[in-house]
Image 1 (cartoon, rainbow, N blue to C red):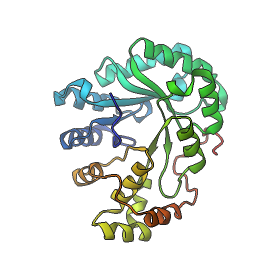
Image 2: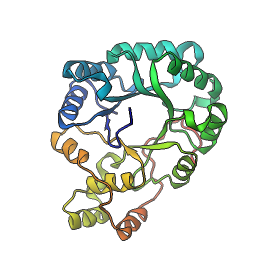
Image 3: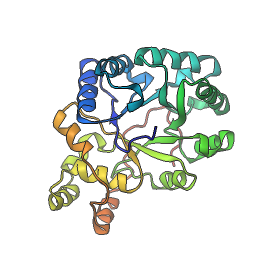
Length: 266
């Protein structure tokens, strides 16, 4: 199944908020749901997916392996536990959530376990998240770019990650942009507000369209039905070259996801 270009992120959504967001998303037409072991909401996502009555094959489902489960001994058992919570036999995509802190688990070991998970049918595809160029090059050397479905990274107008994005696209690895709306900061940006007013759009529409024009997959999140609906309506080809240049000028290197164990960024 091809990954829909607009997905529904569930980061920071727990309990009823997670259930309601995913339920509304499916009702509105989202067919790409993104979760992770560390989000602690796989059970809620699975409950809604099963309760929706929607054929499993109609929804592209992603989860991510947390850092403590990257070893050969723990990866597949942890993925099977995720599948139980998600009430499914497989996910469409499983990612390494972050490179192993301080390289404690060799990347080759983790990728070998992921490839085994794929061969067992536990995941249709495998990929990575938060990998800088140095780690990506290692991954490509180990399993080949064709076996890395995506690198999910933070991308928004204030952190455009141009060097990494260019590298990924040059080797044929899809870029999935998380936090595309910068925790809502884009909604108050004067430049984006002006562009949005020209098109009868919201700043969120503008940013999602801008990312999609760059062939990126986007996974915004919201607990509000109106926002979920608007995000899903974002379309490519709406912005002029001048408008894209204005958005490009907003890049300031402002990183929102930067835990102590993060890799050395590009």
